[in-house]
Image (cartoon, rainbow, N blue to C red; front, side, top):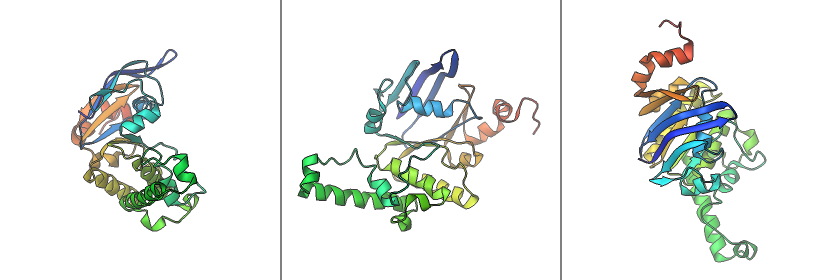
Length: 253
């Protein structure tokens, strides 16, 4: 199993934001993590990536316990992520936003940078080549020289994904990648995520937009910090607990 959490719990004072939460993600899967507002989805992401400390429980990645790892250590192991609010460099070009995210790979020393050594030039050429490949994957190669602040909302979302891909993740955590997109942007984003899997990247997605179900191999549903359902998209759609969590106990199909 690529990623696994066991009895994952996060308390904020007396509030249990996540409680005894289990999730498994196998290599090559696209797994959806869905639930109503405030269910604990982004908190789960923050726990996995070390942004928040775990109260109790365990997180393993590629068989290694990463429960107490710091965010930069988690990223170096091969877990990338996006955020609901894109942390872009708005005055940088699209290409510069992606190249700036290659800080983990490859490495040039201050000496190499200051003296413009052959190693530094090779690294810079490599980074630009890989950045263009990523922009091609997410459909932004034609906007490479455009300032990030001038991009449409959907393209800014995809640029956030491109920045995460620049860290060379084995597992990519996408936090509401479809939020605020129009129908054409949504379709492009779904196609892009499929392309990531084709390129060997496993994906775990948090999303409110139920169109994401068409993309997922499996879906895990969380409500009030606890897992209430797991299964195929069809099984999740038909689950009475899921319907109640989203629409209320009195909802009638």
